[in-house]
Amino acid sequence: MKKRKSISYAKWGYIFLIPFFLVYAVFSFYPLISTFATSFMDITIDQGFISFSGAEEINNGFCGLRNYTEVFTGEIGRSFYNTAVMWLMGFVPQIIISLLLAAWFTDLRLRIKAQGFFKALIYLPNILMASAVSYLFYGLFSQGGGIWTIIKDLTGYEGVLLDSAWGARGIVALINFLLWYGNTTILLMAAIMGVDTSLYESAQIDGANSRHMFWKITMPLIRPILLYVLITSLIGGIQMYDVPTLLANSNGYPGQSLLTLVMQIQNRKDASPGLAAAICIVIFIVTAILGGIIFLATSDRSDRRFKKKSKNAAREAV
Amino acid sequence: MDEVSKARQSTGKGYLRAKRILAYTVLIILIVISLLPFYLLIMNATRGRVQAGVRWYPDVYLLDNIKNLFGPLTTTNYGSVFRALGNSLFVAACTCVLTVYFSALTAYAIHAYDFRFKRAAHTFILLIMMVPTQASAIGFYRFMNDIGLTDTYVPLIVPGIAAPATYFFMIQYMKSSLPLEIIEAARIDGCGEFKTFNRIIIPIMKPAFAVQAIFSFVASWNNFFMPQMILSTKDKYTIPMILAMMRSETRIDYGVINMYIVIAVIPVIIIYLFLSKFIIRGIALGSVKG
Image 1 (cartoon, chains in turn purple, cyan):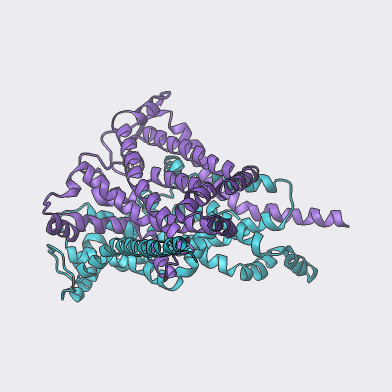
Image 2: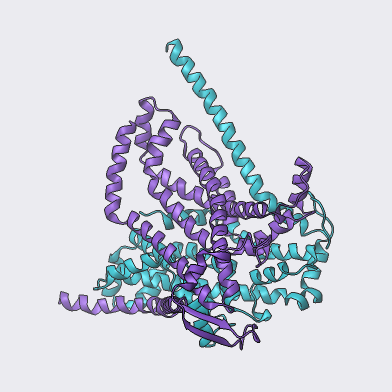
């Protein structure tokens, strides 16, 4: 009786999984395989028709790893560099500020008031349309724009930041910072609040000040979440597209210094699909490795190890 | 209490006060930096077509800008605003419904049933969670081209059915608040499996549905990469694409542009004003394991 029951219900498990796996196979898995295949092909476009539809493709066949070497050299190599630099410029201040805010928000003695209000405000930019925000910043930082004028009035600097490579990259980093620091703060807060408060209490009784408690208890215990934040930010960073496109136009002004990898995919999807596909596969490999690290770090085995480690850390701190 | 400990306590209090002042100052500075651009945006939406310098209080051109935004000049250059809004709304709403419903269904399959590949399916979904759509973009684009789906909304909406991150949230939620006894009870009462999901599970999952509906709606509403890759007819453009089109032109009416940015951003801000508490709770729930 029991056996029959379990057999008849298992069927429903499979049935309910069909939509997800079917759609995944058609819209993600098959495209991934065909991207992989395309990335080894030398495909050019008949110069007569560069237009969107009806462009005639010329497939020059297998070309080995040539597309891949091109990803890391020349113009696309520089886009790789731009992407990495702009990510780093946004991430470093983001993690510092977020850690600071999360530590303050959760400090039992500091008792910051109106936390809900502050959290809601710092998270707000994250849900706004990145392309609209970037377009807004383009206007504000252009010559005669609002923030340009404020900077001029405060410092006397009359240059246009958007016209210099590092100025423009700095603005991209600033936008990414503003869009994401609230999200990171909330994640880190959740992690810090998950730490057993008795650890802090006993540390306090033993005379530890809040700096000790932060570095010796909080930091070791939230390391998995820090790793998660770092990796998800890297994965988000390698997809950077909306912000530089709307800030600098699709050519990455000034002097292609804002061109990112995904902008290159978009710009080359028709003209040189093989090369664009190779960029896709590089992104796939990077994100798969990063995702794998998170997967291993959060799986149960390392969870247990982490708990043991954190107990030791707590003992050391106390 | 002896002198020393008294002194230590008072310096501790002074230190705490200084730290508190520092914390509030940093917070207020950050919030000013975060909100200043949007304040200037709203001010600029009330200004004329040529805008120079900062303006801290509203100008008189708000109604003109609204009129121009919906007027014939903007419509011929960038297509009707209503059309773009409608397109964005249509894509976002459809994606949101599909994502939430099918993610819950997938999570339910793995949470409620015992079958051979259950663990494998779960692990597989977690493994693909971090791989972005960009990783298969060229194959996707060429495949859609081959089967004639470019310049339609299908490639923007249907992939929403397979949303690993939403699945992950749903299964976490089910683990914490969907006891299997409810399903047993429904079975005893003779309720079919599919009906149980639709009539009993979905109402229980309402809070999770609400949070994930907002996230997937906003993600689709803000999405720029995929529509830019797939759509080519101006009439089908979504709002981020219109903004990109405006950005690539030089002769532009700044009043109208700022108005357009306001339109792109305001619906989401309004949703957020009412639901920020749930949204913020949702972020922490979705990503922190446990």
